[in-house]
Image (cartoon, rainbow over all chains, first blue to last red; front, side):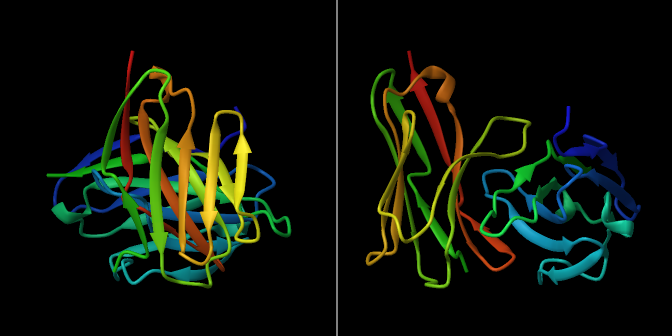
Length: 115
Length: 110
């Protein structure tokens, strides 16, 4: 399967713990996005990478959230000191570097539950 | 502030009927409007997309109608099938950001 993969698929943690999620984009895609989706809502943009550079961050991304994309390949999203309000589906998407091609390919998501 | 407003929130259609989902936006900088289909437990999957220089785009049973002056666009699913039952999201893109609607839960009754 050459699609976007995310790991883990599910995570249950206690409030105050740190969690880290991984996203492996489609190999030739240089653009990578993180979104958060809560029940009954559409995905909300969190951050965007072009290669290894983090070019945009949403105001939703508090200081407890950090994302990296070393070497422009896989990406990690870390949430420190988790809160119950962080419970959501975290989606990763990638997009190819083709002029005029904005199609995003989403992974299956990581569902986080903070107890 | 919701950049893209989507309606209805839920929709029930008989098999063979037409499903219509509407979206509206305000930001004229948006230049790419995709529709995504999402099944429970899965990530969204691109269904069809349109640019504002085109008023209609059709792919199989799926059609996007785009009204630039009204800043509205809609998804039409012809001959709706039970397998189309899913949540549909419209989105709008400018630069590196995508803004999604709140979703429409479609149920197609056999």
